Length: 459
Ligand SMILES: *[C@@H]1O[C@H](CO)[C@@H](O)[C@H](O)[C@H]1NC(C)=O
Ligand SMILES: *[C@@H]1O[C@H](CO)[C@@H](O)[C@H](O)[C@H]1NC(C)=O
Ligand SMILES: *[C@@H]1O[C@H](CO)[C@@H](O)[C@H](O)[C@H]1NC(C)=O
Ligand SMILES: *[C@@H]1O[C@H](CO)[C@@H](O)[C@H](O)[C@H]1NC(C)=O
Ligand SMILES: *[C@@H]1O[C@H](CO)[C@@H](O)[C@H](O)[C@H]1NC(C)=O
Ligand SMILES: *[C@@H]1O[C@H](CO)[C@@H](O)[C@H](O)[C@H]1NC(C)=O
Ligand SMILES: *[C@@H]1O[C@H](CO)[C@@H](O)[C@H](O)[C@H]1NC(C)=O
Ligand SMILES: *[C@@H]1O[C@H](CO)[C@@H](O)[C@H](O)[C@H]1NC(C)=O
Image (cartoon, rainbow, N blue to C red; front, side):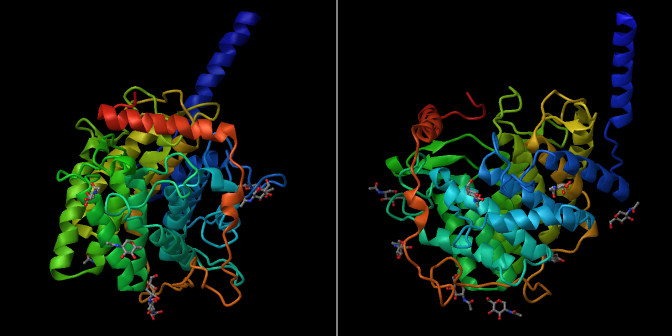
């Protein structure tokens, strides 16, 4: 009896797995949509923010606030690529609930760990919503474009040329650890938003900021001459040394910004951006496993020690490469060679868990590696739906049918006549010892990297 039931359970499980294993025919658009739908469903199953006792826009432990913004961005992409509006309601609700009292994605609850990059992930989600014509918020809410402009304006005010002759600090508040760090994702996402605001509005001020940020990133060595993008540098030593670790999303975030500028410029300026797009695309080769065209996170996947944040970075490289292919057509074939191979490999990795379609980490392994989470699901979602890129139109601008409501003064305190512009409440949130300890560990790691010059591997 016992033996029989064990055998039968095992057989049943195997059958369930075989039946459930994610199928993907990369040459069939319907199959790609189905695969995207399957992994999106499991990703959203981690989210309870729309339930009666949930907070819209938060995933909760172990996922930081920014990653929820990144997830909703992937759901905006889902609507764009597949036309499926199933998740629009929770997405719009989250995007508006987290906008903060000043409508700039600096919600008070996040003060104790709010980085410019965290804010930017929500800002980039809003920018995407404007570009893809995602349904507008209700009239009494700021438009998607205005939300992205608010993030831009807030960050431009924080440009810091007191140290390192420029750049943005990672953290917004001086009392948070990491305030001294000037890192690539922070510069890169500000650059990305500025470039896309320029593309959408044609306002030259955004192009000037984008160019200044890119050039500063090069000057200080965050972007090397060989287009490696290093993680960050330390303002406490005037940015005289670098943390050389490389993450896929850093390359991706600059790549899309450069591609948007390429698309909207002419002559020599266009050639300048073409060179950078091509350089960053070449530099992205580090994030493809050996000669397979299969994306991987080189700094942590080989030892399987990616943290929760890092588990989701492939999603953003896939997202921004697909965006690059759209606006810089000369990259299309080379990008799709990689996105196709990566999607086929990812589908094989999505064959685990109780559902038989849970996605793991290492796409270059032919079967589920036993890991799971929002990051793994999002990575697969973005790489699958990216393969529908040829079916969708390119990003809108306000001269090609984009109608998202903007406000060039959003976030500055002068954005509406009634705006008091009084002191921002955020800084009054008490910081607990626990929060400090958590962030302190991060800073310690940063110092080790800077001094030790760690290259690929997370210690
Ligand atoms: C929350 O959103 C999910 C996904 O769209 C949906 O299945 C669920 O019914 C929603 N819950 C509530 C309480 O609306
Ligand atoms: C901030 O926290 C309070 C208390 O938990 C919650 O009611 C509110 O929805 C949160 N706001 C945001 C923007 O997360
Ligand atoms: C430094 O930054 C401030 C504020 O953005 C700006 O007003 C000033 O002109 C900058 N100085 C230099 C030397 O770039
Ligand atoms: C700090 O670095 C900047 C940029 O590299 C440089 O221009 C400046 O002279 C440096 N300042 C000091 C005090 O070394
Ligand atoms: C587009 O945006 C720019 C900058 O905000 C504005 O000057 C221009 O009038 C807008 N064009 C349209 C067609 O709305
Ligand atoms: C262009 O953007 C800048 C910076 O946000 C803003 O101050 C200016 O008003 C904008 N110009 C127009 C025409 O929208
Ligand atoms: C899939 O989409 C591509 C790009 O638009 C199109 O050329 C192709 O015919 C579609 N294939 C199928 C099987 O629908
Ligand atoms: C700009 O992007 C659009 C798609 O959004 C594309 O059709 C066009 O060819 C691109 N322009 C250039 C100069 O590559």
